[in-house]
Length: 233
Image (cartoon, rainbow, N blue to C red; front, side):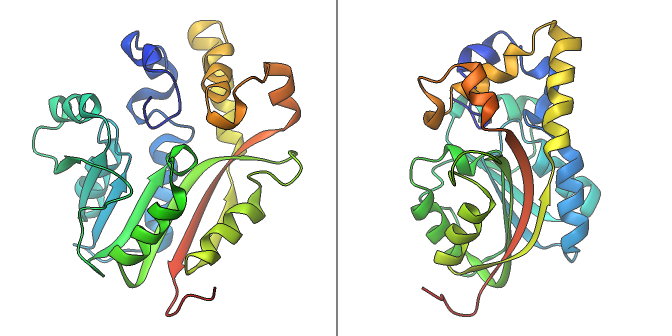
């Protein structure tokens, strides 16, 4: 399994790359740029990309914004592929539950299409809070559901972040990128099932059929949250 939630077989055959490019997610680097420009990080700000995949976000933040970005991924295979593309990028193999950063070291942490796949999101968010500076920011883009009886909706993410001492600064629905990805699947492979299979492979969707999943209205979002002075819960 990689950071997008798709089976590894999709990567071995290069199927998803044909419609997403090397970012392997809806919105690609457009959302990364939007978040970086919204946050207005000073040059040299230290930023960790959790689930860095092919290293595209780390490369972008370093080359276009002059940020001290580095990446972390649990899959050695992804790290090696990223290194093949960008040999000089600072990329590490490691766990989101044990971040390679000292207390209060980081200006920001990015998780793009990663948080919803982590086995221990509470541990990860506690680690994010530990590693971030007092005014540090957490940037997340991911899937959510707009019609699933309260499961993984906007309020779920707001409550989860608040429980770990983060206040929401920005929430933007980016479901249009998910729709565009479905269109690209059809145009690129003649089969929108490529993306639906990725979504069905997510743990919460095991056992569902495509028609059932569509009723939940999967969407995509971008959020920015800031570490609070004190935890409120």
